[in-house]
Image (cartoon, rainbow, N blue to C red):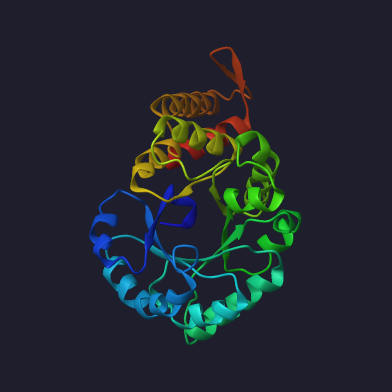
Length: 280
């Protein structure tokens, strides 16, 4: 499984060991242990001391990622504590430059003692990060995904985290991710909704329509909606199968063009159909 295959990535507090077993049973495609927002300043070292044990408890049940701190004063110590060979990825928050990514990639390589370093998920959470998307996405070969941090971005912009206000930035992140073959995680709105699941599901649908491939989940209740929303629907798969069948029939008959349900089928349509089938 690659990062592009992940639809739901559930946050798990690294110090809440009593939640590990339940977290692994929630159906998320991957789990992320948080060293950043979920950990108060006076507990950062305690979290680092526990992270290797936590990864060991979870890694056999699901792919495990870790979100480190953006603060340079905390970041280096975070990375030194990571069992890098067992991680499916490292989430780097508030990325605003290629230099940040390159430094982290180097430290991960050092921590892995020359072994393969885990991929980096660069979280775009500020206006400057959006402006520098291309240089961040291409900063290092270990960058495998871009993530859009809607809440932090909205705070930086002094706006509410609504789909309307975040639409442009969300499109920019998704476009850049696809331009360079990266996974794209996030929602064009607040991730904080944990009760109104109809609204959350609508936000997931909007994210997928923009081009996002998955999202982080802050509560287990969000997981099934993320999994469903970032998967092709039965109707989409039926359409895709019909398109591919019509295209293959046209090839056999030597036809250069073919129509299905009153619409012409050309190469981009066929490729999109095959892509849907590969995810179904």
